Length: 128
Image (cartoon, rainbow, N blue to C red; front, side, top):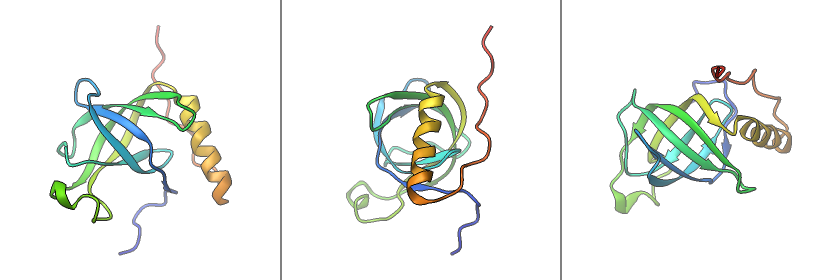
């Protein structure tokens, strides 16, 4: 099946924690993009759920963000390592901290693979 979206995704395994109120469940990314990420996990949240994510970049810099689960693929825990996609696709809705570090990380991935830069970044609401 052909890719439906015009988004450059990069296969990248990053450690993260996620949860609906606080990020407590440990998981990993399978791929990342400027606008979202795929979380490999058997602890799924239903599509439409807002989740909090604490992501650790390769340089150990933490990124805190809010995302919305867009889709899920449930796989039995014993099969998670055998199936290509098992977990949930998450759209980034808001950065809480570390947006510039995340954008820089994505820009570096684009440069390494020869892809053009992503569209303008998401804007976090201004704090008073």
